[in-house]
Image (spheres, rainbow, N blue to C red):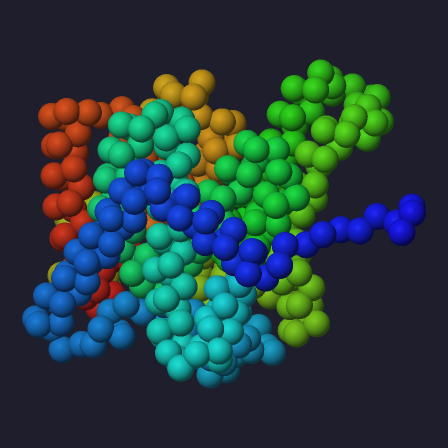
Length: 415
């Protein structure tokens, strides 16, 4: 056996034992247990709100939890994508939704007997739990144990987390992004890049992970003492840690790029998703998104109600957009205040998603977009304590109770 190197792998039984031991070690963390307890409690609250709605309206739990875009994710999972960009069967179509979440729904539904709705809800609930634990860990790294607990309490009962109990993508995206942010700080570039690559196939806003990875890599290169000069590329390639940091930005867009290649073969256009979003779905980016929402409020109240998402022709989503903008700007200001404690990649994520929310014509800042830019929500736990935090929590829960009911109700409030 001289000169032969053998690699010993643990026996299957030992592997299972190590896996159980690692899971037990994670669950022994008091913050993890606290996060999961709050998550379960908040899910029960949202279920109770849905139950009250069931008693007062002629609807079903299936309809409530797959309301709005949930219907289209389930349709994408069951029917996949049309071959034509503008399908004659209806105004909207599945090409406006990215593939990872519907594909996972299809896989779980085919592997089990819970069906597409059960699969979509299971993925959303499980991903939400993982995201909550990871976000709690990030909050502890940034601000310490006590602030992390306050952040988790505010987070779990924030109105936007209703989508963790619906057939929506935000929980999956947040689990991937939060995990990637942790891995980036550990300098585990390959794993971080893979998570970001999968995130880029969840929703268009999640393409912000590419910017995050570029910023993280540039930070690492700067930390290695490499200045941005003509010789910088060569110096980066010669420096192993700097070179390894390039893995994350190179891998981060692979989900979106892969989807574009698929669409090219499937429909004849790599931009079919964008075409459908800007066409039938009427989504666009404009710096006037929030002013337009405010103008619509004035017009609908004082001139004539013309909206179809609220009572008397008044679109409630415009009110939510204005209030969400105020909260987002406050959250971003707080993040700037704590910028020395929060890593630059996490700040970059919050800013990118915040800018997308502020410029989205159809979905300007609402609770669902705010939780996607999660640092702007959990920073409340770092900023507020004592009586001020108790007042904030009371307002938070009251807002959740009211908004969640109308989210389940028809099409009044968009998640």
